[in-house]
Image (cartoon, rainbow, N blue to C red; front, side, top):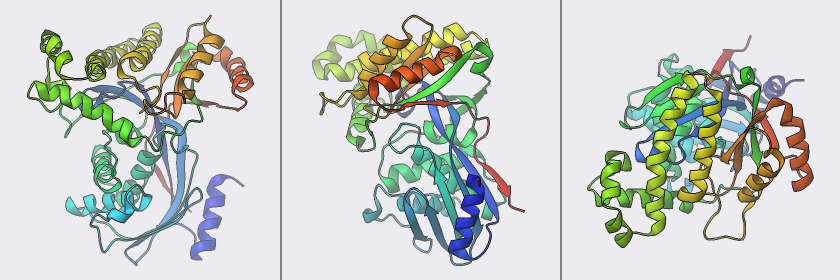
Length: 396
């Protein structure tokens, strides 16, 4: 029995009827642009074949009745879409916030029953929350709005819900990557209307594989560390009378560097340096992808990792410097793959979670086995870029 059949059977067990539709929504990887989105910079990200799978049907009760095989039952009454402080940091908050944004923007919402299962690890940096949000948004979109709402709008509703109802100060990269699918470059200079550029890159054509390495250091409870990056970058921008670093010229930043060092922490200044370099780097990477220049792609991803380690400093939490599983996995990767051309870097928000590794396909088995020997765990997860965002099909 495959997963979809299993979910259909579970749905019948719970509701006494077969579901109307199936849905899959991808997680995502960040390729370049680490922590630049919230400063209106440029990022490159991709949807991947680690996903949430679900089945669903409308109901007439104005209630979202969702059963997750990972987390159990969630019942959300849509008659009250106001923020509930007691729901902060819960999936219920995400559902309610997305429904609120549909209503606010004069879209239709209504009840549905759903059963879902996810293989997107929570706290892994693969955007389990964004995948869930995009799935919920597209269920409302398909069941009540004739699938008429474009991916960017669904992503915007999701971000609002995560920022305000869930309480996490995230940017928009994760949701856009999950909503669009494929590899995309995203320019956040106009954060209300970011420019999304689809890119084509099949690394297997060049003899490379993509891996996510689970460091087994859950980063789900590191909201303060993430907020610290955003706040410190914004403080530097504020010195120039701007809200975001993308609105500060790099030349003006370096001209005022002595004053900045006198008025802000060294780490804040370093993080600003990372922003300027990383935004340029992500743009260069999009051109390398368009030119099918795989060597430059590999070099730029390594440079991104180097900058994140030294300047952004999101490899481990400063509050727990003895816990450095990410650093350890990067060091082991260098030991194992040091004699071949590869790329490795912290993945996503950082401070824990996963690292991204791009390596020759003939090294995958060796790398996986060696990492298992060192860590005692099968921590290497091969992934592929998934061309689609959410995919919905009617069930016959």
